[in-house]
Length: 109
Image (tube, helix red, strand yellow):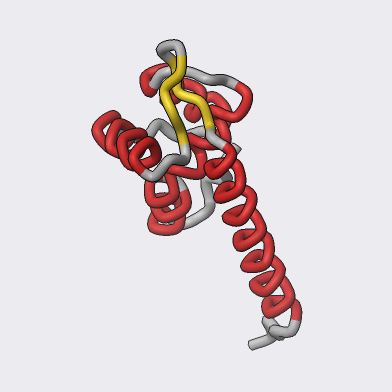
């Protein structure tokens, strides 16, 4: 669940601004429809993406070949999985750099 103390601007950037990662993550194990994905994102990650933004994200992901509609539901493609794994690595590296940088700061005033 998302910590309520994180500034809203950061939350918006890592939720709605990166919605494609959440969509791919949810679809990996739950091929589904946008409406159901919205509910799953709320349950799993604690935020509800705007419906128009979600449908736009689905359209873009499908156009880019990262998801495809199969038997009426959307599924992640191999390219989608590859891109998601790359994004996760970028986020891990960023978190490591931020964490390491913050360890060297003295909070004494």
